[in-house]
Amino acid sequence: MDYTLRKKEVMFMMTEKMITLNNGVEIPQLALGTWIVDDNKVAEPVKTAIRLGYCHVDTAQAYANEVICCEV
Image (cartoon, rainbow, N blue to C red; front, side, top):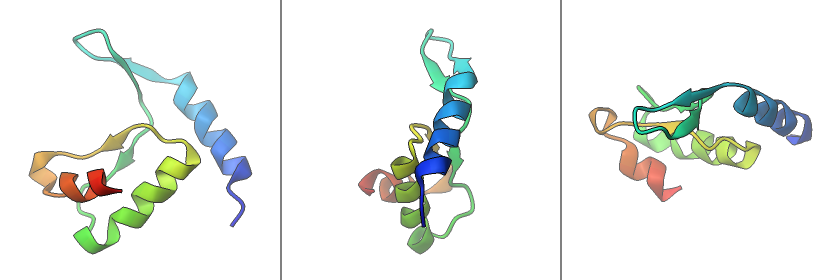
């Protein structure tokens, strides 16, 4: 699959909309959600998202998958 066009689209969306956190740090509004993704299926979407330029992966202790996401 050719990711060139998609990466450009993702980078455009990520630079257009940012959220400012309470501590003043800005993060991209566009994020990859990992809620309700089976542990054995979460690694590939995270790898693909990072390859496309995502820098915001939404994970949480409550999802119980943050360790797997961080190993990617």
